[in-house]
Image (tube, rainbow, N blue to C red):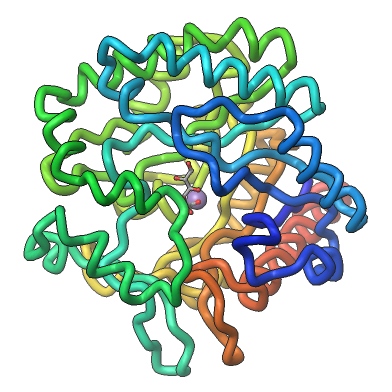
Length: 356
Ligand code: CS2
Ligand code: MN
């Protein structure tokens, strides 16, 4: 297990590499070229430059999150092959720079969806939260505007303003894309990129849909164990793998996280381990990582990863905003650092126990 920390680059992140290096046990960052647009090929020199910055700070790049897949590939329109070529160029450049894990998602239009970015909890911390009731009331073309008022000026990952200004057009693009079509387009994309992944030993790690059900009438396909297993079988190559994000996959309460870890063992290349607190099955908030603060048994999750032989990269995910920190919602330093250390504590105990 390699503990890592997400970092958006010095131009976008309020957290410095210097501070990340001081989190016990964290040796690497998960980063991205945050100012690229989905669909464009990443420049080798830009990758070199961020790699140098990270290495100079005494850390390494453990993986990329994300290389976003553009809508043309997701809907499978006439331009997709050209965009897939760009994606292959990006993977080639990453491979040449010795980077071997790429997280991505295949959600239509929106990345993860929350209806509140700063719900105040009884201890005064703030957390991101979701209620289905609120989603049902929002006009999808307005969700970007309503959320962006609360981001402290930060751009949320996957919510590129350029794309969001065309929400209407995006909905139009997806109008005939049902779950089967979306799935076929994902398989087409993966088959096309597997040769370059084989060449450079790049593990593709799909992120589960968040929440794990359809929102705004758009199809969602990475929502339960059966769907994930189906995808792994459809492109049966070890480089076609998964980011196990407990806080996303676990939004659906009948998704059994532990059982799923065993079902897909060997294909989990990256883990986001965080907790959720449910008020009702469709009203949840992103609690602290600690088991007792939310509804997941974090010990059981870490033990399942351990016992199933997981030895990939792992990171804490969305944290609460605490101690007066101002940062991108979910991505402050303090609570994620607490999460990183807590997860390592669980791991150490599980490891020592199993060796007794
Ligand atoms: C999110 C996503 O839960 C998460 O990790 O912050 O933005 C995630 O990075 C993407 O869906 C992965 O492509
Ligand atoms: Mn995640």
